[in-house]
Each structure stands twice: as structure tokens, then as C-alpha cells.
Image 1 (cartoon, rainbow, N blue to C red):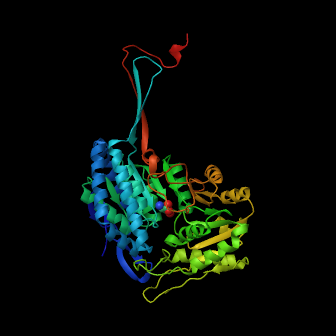
Image 2 (cartoon, rainbow, N blue to C red):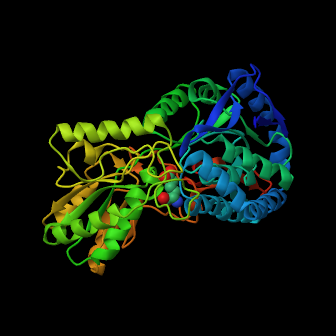
Image 3 (cartoon, rainbow, N blue to C red):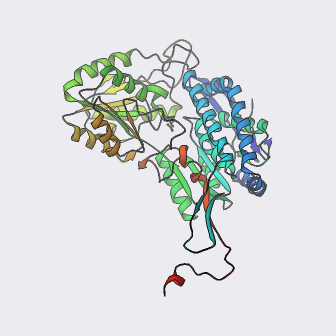
Length: 495
Ligand code: UN1
């Protein structure tokens, strides 16, 4: 099957007629489908269409826009299973996880749809008599979204639903590894009755399709989630065009396990956080800091649980861990592990790739891997690997633990396992991350809270939650003077 670009409500071939293949990472000899290998011509056309649709969509009453979003939410709900299965095929994570991914999109859709009847501005008093002061939210225009492959429909939904309900139009360039899920989202919007041109999908590669989206002057904002390396390109390019942009990038998320923690619970949290989604979440647990007194028991249990994880095709309900997304990802993980062994580190478990963990599959599988006694400044503790590799070390006291968990250039997520309520609140205060968990893993954010991070993770914006509308609107301050005379703010009160 060959999928097309979705532009102006119709499915179109890329202008040059080239396509690229979408491969199942658990069956790498299997081409699932083909997608348009688009370039600047296709992007510019989609942007023009979105630009032309903006005026009409902006002037459509927000409650009406919200009604279309509610319909889209219901269609996503109806099609959840079908989308989840297709997503497991193109992305690799288990069906339970892809169902969760679609559910996140459904939750976001309902949550954002309600904004159609909310989206409050503010009314504030004036310092002058008979003058009215208020602010309202205004859409920005065409928003260019560049989205990653690890949450193929959830993250596009975090960006699309708030932006559209707020009156923006959108051109989205999904990751080349998972374009199918975003084409499904376009089908959903189409069926829900979204007017032509409001939401457009152009598939392709970053340099040929993503870059022209950033540089097109009619794109008024870029919303990006992906790697730090690409985020830097987005950042410098947008800056040179004086274009607003929001970035959501990497993480190096730590779990701190105190000596009073429920050890079994903490072990479960680490296994889920480190090896769920094959470690391919920006919120994944990639560093674990354990109190020295409980280290041996913790490690023994962690290794035992990790050894039991079953690798294979995510469509099989017995499987815990799917493949990595592509060969490049496998090489990256392999590189980090090989380099670590050259530094004298030895994995307690894992540390090798395995093409066919069972007869049904052949793909980019990597055995879940644990390194112990890793220095806090070691590469394994500092760089984002984006695979099933976790580094463990010990600490002696609380101050050291908090220092260690913050000793990274990233600031997305962190977690603490303890029974001490005072320490829990201290941690919420002192953890230098956008998201902090107590007695829960570093993954699993809910859409009704802002999602994002500080330091090297983001640039001050948040998807989802209460900040989602702010992220894609401008505030307009509106003043009406009904005194019938010239009133001068500030200066006329000085006698
Ligand atoms: C990501 O890894 O880019 O909090 C997003 C979580 C998920 C979203 C992760 N709800 O782990």
C-alpha cells in the first residue's frame, strides 16, 4: 500500500513522485507500506493551503471548533484497536503500550476539545475610570509540527488538538519511521469534518521536508519533539527567522531509591521505566541511584526481574520488550555498551543484541542491560542512549542522592522511592526536572499536566496540561475607554 500526503483535505503524491519504505522493526525483511518522500515543493504547497485556511478557521467560533475535536476523539476511541495494531507494526512497542499511546491521544482530544468552550482570557481593573481592560487568546497562524516516532500518535495529538481548537492551522511532518500513525490521525480529522486545509500531513525526511517547514515564512511557529541534535538545528534556524518555537528534547532521568523504600516497588518502577518501550522514551529511566545499605538486595531483585523479560514481536501478548526502532538505534546502543566495556565496565545482565529472540521474529532486538557501580560522571550516566540500558550506582546520604540525580545536563523527569513524607516534599522542591515522581517511575505522564523539562531538555514551553493553549496562542490585550474624554494612563495622575 502506498500512502499519500494529506493536503487541503485530499491525498496527494509528492511532486517528484518518490516514496520511501516503512519497515516493521520486528520483521525487518517486511515492508509494511510506502510513504511520500516529500520535499520543499510539497511543504510549501501544504503551508500555502494552511495559510489560506487560517482566516476561515480562526473566525469559526471556538465552541464549533471544539465540537469537531469531540467528534475526532470519539472516532479515535472507536478505532483504537486498529490504530494500536498498526502502530505496533510500524514502531515495535507492545500492543499494551500502543493502546496506551492511542489512549493518550484520546484523552488529549477530549481534554482539548473542552477548551472550545473555555479558553479564558482575563478581565482586570483599569487604573482609570470608565475604562475596560481584558486579554484574549489569539491563534498564531500556521503551526509547523515535527514529531517523533516513539509516541507516533500521542505526541502529534498533544500538538494538534490544542493548536486546532485554538484556531491555528497546521502542517505536520511526522518522523519517517512512523508516518502511518499520523496519516491515521488525518483520516480521523477528515471523518470528523475538519475543514480542508486546516490539518495537513507531509511525510518525508528531516533535511528535505522538515527543514523547509521551519524556514517557510508563512509558518508562524514550530513545535518540535525529538532529539537534542535536531532540536539545536530547529532552535538556531528558527532564531535566524525570528520565529517562535517550542522544543521538547532528551532526558537522562534518574530514580533515587532510599534505604526505607519498598524495594520490590522500586525494582518494578526501574524495570518498567528502563525497559518499557525498549527504553525509547525521553522519560525513560536510564540512571538509578541506590542507598548503599540496600544496594545488594536491590540489585539482586533487579537482575532477577530483568532476566525474565521476554523479547519479541509486540503483537504477541506474552512479550514484554519489542525491538529498537531501526538499525541506527541498534548501532547507537551497541556503541555505548561496547565503549563502556572498553572502560572496564561489565553488564550484570544483557549487553548484547539478538536478531531472532524467537522463531517468529527477526529484527533490531537488544537484550535489556544493567551496568552497576557506574561513576556518576561516566557517559552511561550522562548521555541519552534511548535504548534498554540502565546504569546503577550507590549513595551514602540524602544530600548526595539529590546532588547525583541533578548532576546531568538534562531536566525532564526524576523519581524518588521512600516512605519519608518530609523527604518526598523536599525532593519535589529540589529535583531539577520538569516532572517529579514519588514512589512511581519516571515514565507515565498524564495529559492534564504540563509535559516538558528544564535545562537541556526544553526551551521553557510545555505541551499538554494547563499550558497547552498558551503554547500555541498569542495574548492580545484589549482596552476600551468609554469615558468620552481623553484619559492618559500613568502620566495624567501625576499632578
Ligand atoms: C516521550 O517519551 O517522548 O510520560 C513521551 C510518558 C509518556 C510520554 C512520553 N506519557 O512516559
